[in-house]
Structure formats: structure tokens, C-alpha cells
Length: 427
View 1 (cartoon, rainbow, N blue to C red):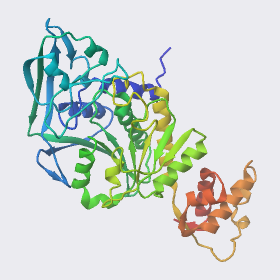
View 2: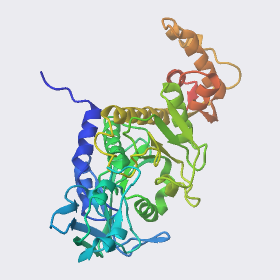
View 3: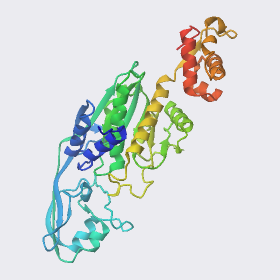
View 4: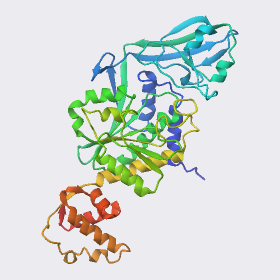
């Protein structure tokens, strides 16, 4: 019998493919990651040269590392990039030297409170070098002379990001963003990349109302670069969602946009509340992932952020414990389902105008009451029609109707479709 593979298992397999790659904000690790995503989605890959001015920032030099290790006095490699991409301080300058342990120690980063875990550390914009290792490894190092090697390059090159567009019926865009810069951290953010990839594939199976633009870019500098290069067309972005930490076993968390009442904020709240899933809605703060770039005052886009346990909200965050076992197929599948449910609401949340606004139109002679006769929810469907007619003034969307009437969104949509078919409302 053939093994049935669930979408969650497929997403977990994608995370596993990307996990060993040594990523940073630039470099071949990002390109290799996008190559893997490109096996599932056609991508338009952009290369932005070092030195390019992007808003208040400048695209940095490109960093690549081939090997990085520490050998103890006996010649045994006690820390090696080949074992984990977390072992080297991100953006380390090249080093080839011998030194005593006392001189090496300031360049070693550990987590004393979790002695078996390796931390994730970077030095993007300040020249430095270093290694990350478990505290128990450091504690076991003998005194003596150590050989240190970091075979890296910092040179003019490019910042790499990619886009995938799912065409819609209208040019108004929904942007879905996932950061691709972190090395071997499964939840932060390989799970987000995997969910975004499968969400794009799911949307492409139909013809969505909005156009969906998926952005796979390094955190902070990648989003800033995209905004700088798209400032002239950013008004097309009507809604957005940043996906991060999408695969742990915690409950879902939605962080509102800076606006606080953007349509995506209301849709996500509605979907989470009506689904019965345990969840938390958080207010916007200018700290976190790339929602803070999209929501910066000059752009002020309606972009929120969806995660499970939020950044820095779990001990494994930015450590080697954020591994393949930390993320589950079931959690990623649940995150994907919520995204699909939210975008299904967003795509159908239209505003209508009542074409017979003077008094209540006669529904019976148009066959609208008769069509409800066999339905178990006939009374609810009838009330939905009356509410749609009452609030179809061009100002209230169907989600407004559902929330004010206390009716299921799908019931309100069905009522609007019936009234539209009878020529009583227009979008």
C-alpha cells in the first residue's frame, strides 16, 4: 500500500532539505535556499549589488564561508562548521591563527543556562569573528595553544531575494513575506518559508480575487531593499502577512499591523476566534520581524504577522534546540490552514450596494425565499439576506455584516451571492 504523505509531512521534508544550509543576510547559502524553494515554485530572483542605497541603509558586502573550525592542542577539531552552520559567528571576518585558550575565549559564545545548546550569533555590520558552541564543550577545553581557522570572504557582491506572484482577478496585492537569512533554525524561519511555499501552491490551484506576492528575503535589510526598489508601486499592496516561527507546537499568535484596524487585522481576528483554536492577538510593536518595515510610518501598510510561539517566546529560540524535532508537520499544516481560511475571507470580503434601497425588496417573488425552503438553516440564511440588504451601502463589507449580525461569514457570503444573482445588490 502506498504511503500517504500529508501536506504537513511534505513541509517538514522541505524544512529538512533547507536545514543544513549555511545562510546569512547575503551569500551562496541564501541562493541555495532559494534554489530549493524554486523546486516547488517558479521564482523571480533579484540580485542587488553591494553599495546600493536602499532607504537609509546600504546593501552590505556579500559574506561567504567555506570552512570554520577550532583545533585543540592535540589537533582534534572541537568546533567545526561542518557539524552545524550555527558554529560560526555570522559575518565573521577571515582568521588563520594560533593562540592560547585565554586569548580565544572572548571569541567564544555559549549559553551557560543551557549547557548542551549552541547559540546563534551574528555581527553583520561590525567586523568581528567568533564561534558558537555548547557550554559543556567549552568547559571541557584544556589549556594550551589552539589553531583557529575561518575561511570566509567579505567582498563586493549582491544581496539576493526572490518573489513569486499568484495572479488574481484584480491588481490589488496581498504580500506574504518570509525571512530566509537564518542558518540551521527550523522554526525561525524554515517553517515559515515552507508554509509560504505551500500556501502559494494552494492559491495557484484556483483564481484568487487578489494578486498574491510572496517575498523570500533576508530579514530587515531584505524587506528594506524590496521597499526601496518598489516604492513607486507599493500602493498596490492592500494587505500583508509576515510568516515566522510557523512550526512549533505552541498555539497561534497574530500580531496586528501598526494601523491596528487594517482589514487583515480584522480578518485574522475573525478567523482565529470563530475557528475555536487556542490563540493570542497581540498589539503592534516596532520590534519583531519584517512587519515593522512594511508598517514603518512612511509606508504604513496593512501588514500583520502570524506565528505560533512568537520570537523570543520559547527557550529554544536562536539556539541549536530549534531543530527538526522542534517543528511538527501537524503544526505547520495548522498554520497553513489558518492562512488559507484567512485569505478565503479576505478574497470574498466585498462591499455591496443595495439596488433597491427604498423599503425591503420583495424576496418571495424573486424565488429567494423558496430557495431556502429545504435548508436546515433557512431562518439564519433569511436573516443573512436581510442584513446584507440593510448594510449594503458601499461602506460596510461582508465581514462587517457577519460580525454585526452574529452570523457565519460563509452564510453571509452565500446570501450576498443570491442577492447579487437576483439583481438586488452590486459589488
